[in-house]
Length: 71
Image: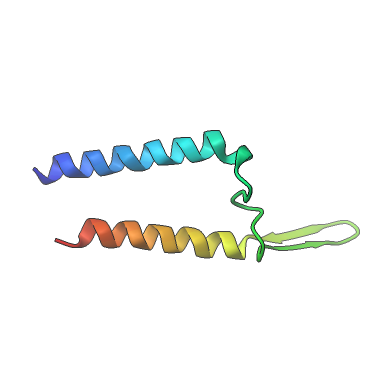
């Protein structure tokens, strides 16, 4: 019973990830280009740290893990 639920949850996550990748270019805010991401362009180098993207993904994954672990 729990294996079936785990497979369904995993499949749903893969479907959502696929939709996000497919429709991601049409969304107004794209992951990796959110306000709060740090981008510093120098003369010969570029430093990029996706701070807001990391926080958003961490929040989403924490919520998913919380939903999967509550019984």
